[in-house]
Length: 244
Image (cartoon, rainbow, N blue to C red; front, side, top):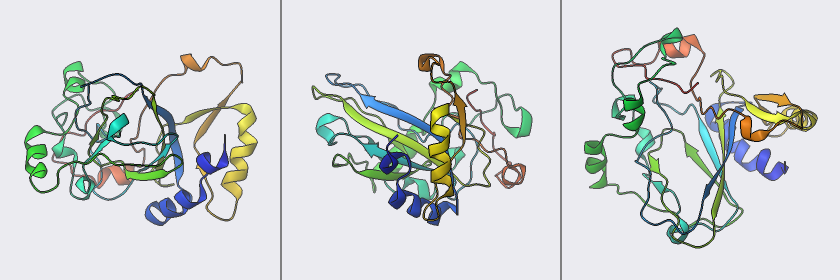
């Protein structure tokens, strides 16, 4: 767990200026596009399936372990889309079962199939702000607002395109998601949290080293458990669903 990735001070300094002091990391994942797949792509989306604020409440850090460009499937980005988007822009903003705290934990599979931004909004934005595929050098870190529209694209090159993703939320947001880490990493993460310059706080669940990582449940739950925050969200639209 190299500190220049897991506790990167320049990135954390910027994120703390946006989200406030001591932001929490609630999610860590690899994102690898294998080579040789042509034509496949994700639907344009934001990483959100529920009603959300229209100010920054989650920042993703993407660390690139290879040079990235359109030649090996860099992510399609719709720059500036996070500034004026809301849950109304999503295909899955439709009636469903509303559960505890106003957010449903049950969802219809047809809603999941419709995951993404509505097509008419994409075409409207494409006229004046079409998407880009960035060129990023190996070893770089890119900060992305969780609300930004984007899409994963196929990697036409022979070698894999490797990217890591860490999601940061404010201390007050109370995101229920936890990062699963080995027990031997607990002391290291505590050192990062206690440092004076740019502390990095992991919302983590520590497990024995012999745990089979392939059996750890994948839960990209970026919702909030802060009831005050939830009450300030627009109440005239569906609250959406979360993955459990």
